Length: 263
Image (cartoon, rainbow, N blue to C red; front, side, top):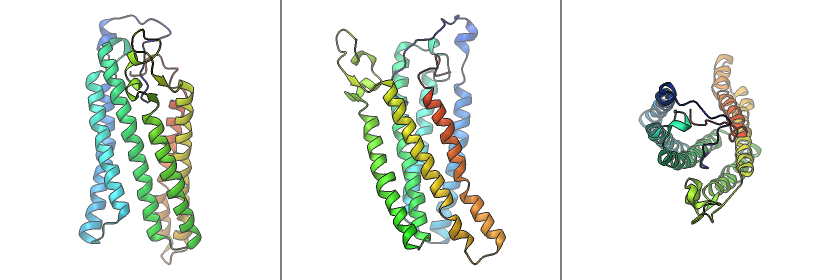
């Protein structure tokens, strides 16, 4: 999410010391830092296995490297957000910091889009290397060209230019009906939400495809049953990403209804 938030709670909060001191930021940072650290550890183990043991580093590894850098960037941005007050009640955050939070959230969303896209590119390239069936390969190339390239670029630039000028995405004085500078044009909240839902739906569809496509191939491998089941279970972890995307879709759908979005 990047569009600037305004203080429009349905009920005026009672400003008390407890209200002002409320801060979930450290807990948020701990959760994000843990998840990113686990992901980076797994990535480093992958790099060690590929480069030092197998002596091979392919396109899928380079794409995953970019995704790992994006994950690190997300953690840095999230720490900056919490220092500005993300995790506190909106009414307890100074107006200047609210503008800065909106700008950092814009960058957060942009890096998130890039990270997810490069993860999917990495998975698709990995499957292309291990799958030799012509019809499967044509299908994967179609996904790379249409779903992962065209749609990702379309969403990427749509997100960047959701407002013209771009700075209006986080700078409220550039938006109507501001007296002096408010002549920016931004997409409506409904359009922004619908595009986010469409992007999440595409992510879920690709996750399901990538998790299920290799199953018939793995099942026909000339290895013991235990090995085949283990490989299928590992690839099936992609369904966890589907569950996360479903939760994200619900959050996007109700994004403009929450009176206190940062707490």
